[in-house]
Image (cartoon, rainbow, N blue to C red; front, side):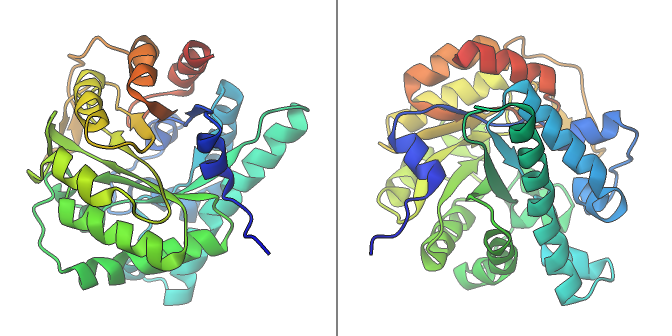
Length: 310
């Protein structure tokens, strides 16, 4: 008996373009939450989970077809450091999937005949757990085994709870990206893997984009590779370079273009005039099939992007 194909991989194989959601933390801050915390948006899983569900629903209503769970910074190790038991930490990760699924069900009930909607289980980098700005540099040195041990519990919990796909995202380190690709294969999962950039040709830690793309080619379960949480213009340049280095479908979901200072944890004035919607045609032409937004993007941005993609 053949295994049922993964729904996200099947949609991409059929040539569909899937609109992702935008910034979760941005919307939580708009609703009054202070996210200056080592758990970042994941702390709202502990304090007000219903608000996270409401944000997911807003993005579905805006035209997103993929909700990304609030687990980016919900590494079990970080939750245990907050005082949760190992089981409680995994339950919080699973809750992030249930909230996205509840929002999905509500949206499908609102709009009969809606296209299929998906849940991506967010797996953020090791540097996000450190909460010291290193997620923007990738200057941490772990062995492949240490990366696997760190990421496996969260990934397993997301899949057990029903995530359709893993979003291994905002990865600044080439070695961490390869470890995550190993993990996806070990788990028999489907995932996209998205990196951050120093410039159009290098990851944040200096790994050449072309070299990493070559090493990821043919990895089992890897449905797409891409770029996220960089300004739109840099994302476009990086995507063009990535497109020359792989035949995989591409993912791109930039931030709003404002510079971020990881030391002060503050956003500066916007200096990138490009928007998600204005870049959509270029991205699709380069082979992007997963398009959305990251930090500081909103449901309004995703609505404009969805219209541009249609």
